[in-house]
Length: 110
Length: 114
Image (cartoon, rainbow over all chains, first blue to last red; front, side, top):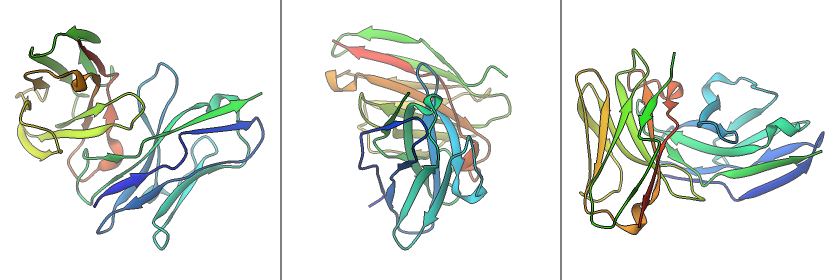
């Protein structure tokens, strides 16, 4: 079965602390993995994708095929990072058909 | 670039009624997808249309249908509304099918069924 699991509904950290949002997936084949973010009163937007191997707003994510994980990390959280974060996957050449996790709300306190 | 636009922003319907939601993709995007997001959950895939043809369907009953027009805009129709259909309905547009990373989402339509 194709599934994305985000075990934490809420993650609360203090400003400057490291952040790790967990994501595990189940997929038969080679999926593409993404992190989407939704800031308050804004639309869902792409944060990063595993094939780009990029760092956006200080966030990075490494695809671990052995552990079927794609955790999102940031060494020093900022208050403006507070948002809903969704991990998602799609099959090869299935752009537009995304399977999302339940989401993790990140709250960064001053 | 106005981004993906959806209408209406929100609406309230009564159980058993029918609803039509509309979506205009980003200029140049030929693929439109629809998602349902129930409160507290991640978006769930409903349909994908590309070049006016259905290219994917999620696990939703036949009460849900959609279509794409020659200008690539799209409509999502839901018949015989149930209380459980209350959700945020998201439209997303993208370039050709293989480029998953350029999926862009609209602001959503908030549907409340009473």
